[in-house]
Length: 258
Image 1 (cartoon, rainbow, N blue to C red):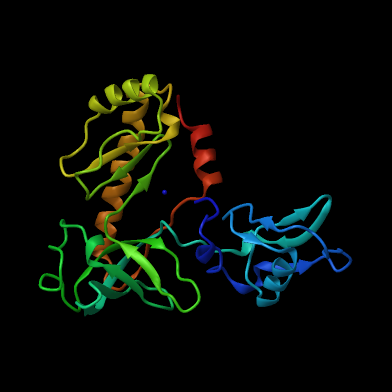
Image 2: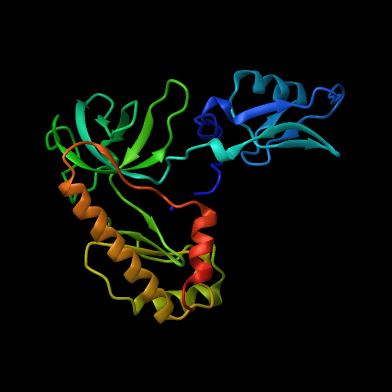
C-alpha cells in the first residue's frame, strides 16, 4: 500500500511544523480561486495563505511563477498502511466499532466491518476488551478525529497487492482495458498461494509474465509470515511494519530481477 494522501483530512494530520513559510512579497489580491494540486479542493489564494497560520501542511501552491506556499513534506511521518499490534480497550456496540490501543500517542477506531473473520466474528459478542490483533492504518487521525484502522491487511508489492486474511478479493480492476484484463487474469490464475488469501493486480502487471508475478507474490507471502509471527510474539501494542513510500517501492522495482 505511500504517496501523498489525497484526502484533505489526511493532509491535515501531519506535524504542524511542515508548513514553513509564505512568500511575503507575493501579491495575491485579485487572483482567481485555485484547486489544491493533491486533493482538488477549491480555495482562494487568501484562504491558502491564512491556512499556513495554523501551521498545517499543504502542497506547494504556485500562481504563475510565484510560489505562495513552501511545504516540507520530509517532516511528515505518514502512518497510513503501517501495521501494528493492537489491543482492544473498549467495545462500542452503538457505533459498531472498537477503540484500540495500537502503540501511538492516541488510540484508534476499529469498525466491526473491518475485523477480519480470521481473528473474530463480526460484532460485539465476539470481540472483547483485552483482545489483541494486528491492524493497519486505513485513515490517519486528523484534528480531534482518531485514526481509522482495519484488520483486513493489504500488502503492496512491485506488481501485486496481497490481502492475506481476505479470501474474497482476487481479481483485476475494471479500469484495465480488455486485452490487458485477459492477459492479467490468465496470469493470476497460474499463481500459487494459500487458500483464504486474495491477490489484486496493480497497473504494473501489464506486460509481466506469470513468473514475474509469482516472484513478487512469494516476497509478499514471506513478508506476511514475518508480520504474522511478530504480531503473535509481541506482548505490547506497537509498530510491526512500516509501509514503504512510493519512492522506496520504485527503487525496489528498479533493483528487482526482471
